[in-house]
Length: 208
Figure 1 (tube, rainbow, N blue to C red):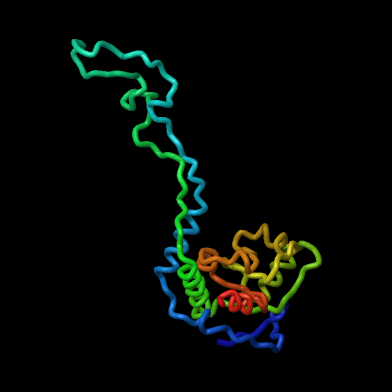
Figure 2 (cartoon, helix red, strand yellow):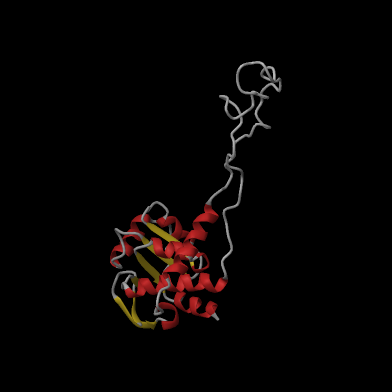
């Protein structure tokens, strides 16, 4: 699959790039995407939820009444979960929600997401560029020239650029990441993918 490389003003640079069919042209595996996205979201959970059980609430330990002869059920402690303010039975405890996935499966998920974007025609290649200062207005103009503004857009850079990142920070529909941060969730979550020329070669090289 060939794509024209555009300049930041939206015009053609005259260069074309060939996207690797083993990355951008595979048959997408929906189950792999599901598992990778599920793991990503699970890893974002803090897992710090906690309730106190009857051994942890601050109440008297005095027995409520006689064991027999009271005319009702036996009660040993006001800390019991049946009383207001008592401990919680089977409440949540701190836990780690993350789980392991094989590297090959995660790679398949990323390639599947990239293949979906390629099939949808939702990938734009732009030649390497830099911004002299953080200017959101100028960054919006670049995205408009590339016809990538007004929808969820993911911009992938070969390396970190502070000015580009700061220029996009106030745009809720735009996310700028480096190639090191690319993952299945961010790819699936975006409607349009803008890649700086050279990113595709890094992806192909790291597959080996």
